[in-house]
Every structure is written in structure tokens, then in C-alpha cells.
Length: 171
Image (cartoon, rainbow, N blue to C red; front, side, top):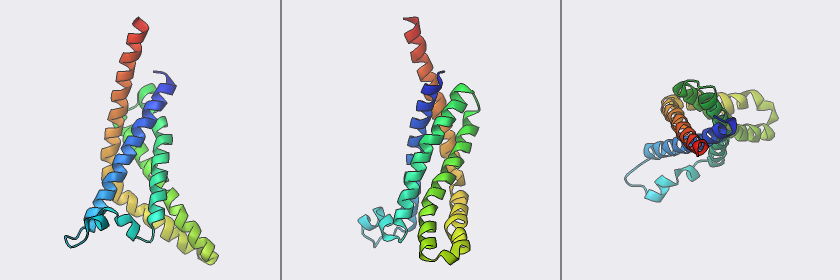
């Protein structure tokens, strides 16, 4: 398969996977705060009731951006190098989750350091190590599941594209 096509398939499927993962996480946290006495809009838009809503949104944008970037690489691994789609999906899922989380954490870290540059050590722990640890621990199973689905989707879309290309060549 052509590398360019493999990259396109990988990038497209990665963004879909990232959006599914983000939506799952968002709904999960909405369910955690669910209270039958609360207004449904408050439950749906819970993110704006937090002090770190912009960190979370930037982290989500980071995850989607990184999914496209690394998804293109995963597409090459699966469709060109013919590596194991399950394993590649899981590995790249963790890479995307880690890099996207780091992007989101950087906002809080820089804000903290600019306010009090003497607290860099505490800021590193509070804005990188703690969030990364929590995200990786609680995100491990969902990332593995979505990563497997992602790898399968790339493989499936690649096979479809090969069939289309072989039909075009035979005509």
C-alpha cells in the first residue's frame, strides 16, 4: 500500500478513536457527579464548573491533534510495515494519551510558574506527575480497548482501500 494512503487512513481513524475516547471520559466524569437533584444542563456541562476547564479543553485539543499526528504513523506501521494492529493500536493509544495530557498539563504548569517561579518543583509534581499518573492509571483499560478498535479499523479500512485500488488497476 502507498504510504500516503496509509497515513491518511491512520490519521482519520485516530481522530475518530480520540473523539470516542474523549466522549467516553467526559460522560464517565459526568456520571460521577450525577445527582438526581441537579439540573441536567449542569450535569452535561460539568466541565465549565471546574477551575481547570481550559486545561481540560486544551488537553482534549492536544489529544485530538496528537491522535492525528501519531495515527498517521500507526497507519504506516499497520498497513505498510504489516505490524500487529492490536499492539500498534494500544501502543499509539498510550502515546497519544500521554502527549495530549502533557499538552493540557503544560497550561497549568506555566500559569503556576509565572505566578510563583520559586515553586517549579511543586508545580512539576502537581501539574505533570500527578495528572499523568491519574490519567494513565484510570485511562489504561479504555485506551487498550479503543486502541484495539483503532488498530482493527486501520486494518479494515486498509483492506477496503486495497480492494478499490486493485479494481481500478484491473480496469
